[in-house]
Image 1 (spheres, rainbow, N blue to C red):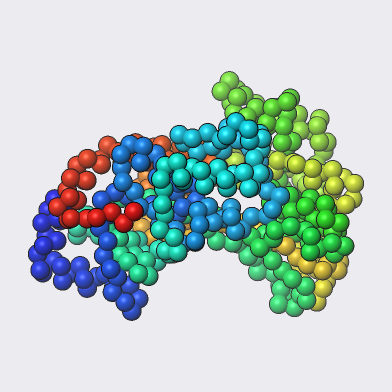
Image 2: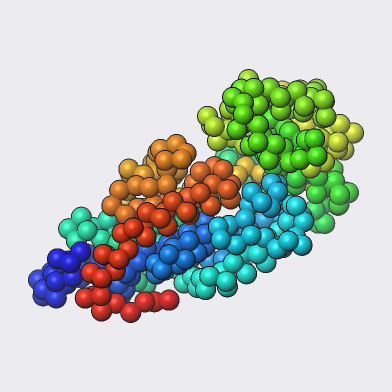
Length: 422
């Protein structure tokens, strides 16, 4: 880096840099950043930034939306609460307020994130979309390009998360269906679906909870269950199922804990196979480790399925007008369709690196807990498929690793006469 700082004043080298700083049809303004550039101002980006600042490391956060935690602020439904107890969801260095309930609401969680950003003086650069990030081996630095600027920095932390883009499946006849078809990212509440027949496609936590919300607004929801899934009570023996599982795993093998969870679930919520919700062969925790598929924590939906208020259907074969034909041959009329089909990472569309992230799904190629660090100063935060607890683990590791390198690289950057954009 010291050599690069000297070369920066070489006219020939300046010309080389200028010719490669073009993004689209415009020449990017170059901004020197002595610390890491964090891409994404969701919980993961905020957590990493707070940990780094606590160690005296300067950071720059780039966020494509106009607010922090845009997924939570813009793309979640109103009744959403954290599915795990707050002690498993708090970010590093700052716990939730003591007066918050065990499962904070969406509004409470957002208030916590706003307070978190204020407490650590985190000021993301909003409305800034990264179009390309690439490691320049010639100078040994990262070049992060937006539509306006090119940021030159020694480290890049990808914190855009597993839920960057909506997954919208292709279903035969979608263009023919006369009612609205919307993704859960556009769903807020069931108040506009009163007395309407609504088909919810997808049986994860979101699909289950949207069905329950629709019931509470006197809609007539049905649920498409294409695959097997584990449904567990949210709490067992007076404790959260997740917390109990973590405690048991300290003493017993995962297969033993899985057998206990399934036995307790059968006793508490009955045989879900009779409701059209078949269980996978692997236990819930083992399946989570192997595939990343999260068990559904029941918050009241099963009772509605059992009472007939929510009907269960298999996969969809085709759509036509206001009819839905299912793979078992049944045809039913629906007024609207809600796609609870999840999200995916979009990292590989802009990050020019194939070592840390898979081209297939945009997730780290190394399994947890090794997927947080790549080569040449590249890091990933919030891609563990372990929620906010995994985010906190990533943030602490990344901050510790960069802090060890900070002093030397920061001194080298002083010669570049960089003035922080923060």
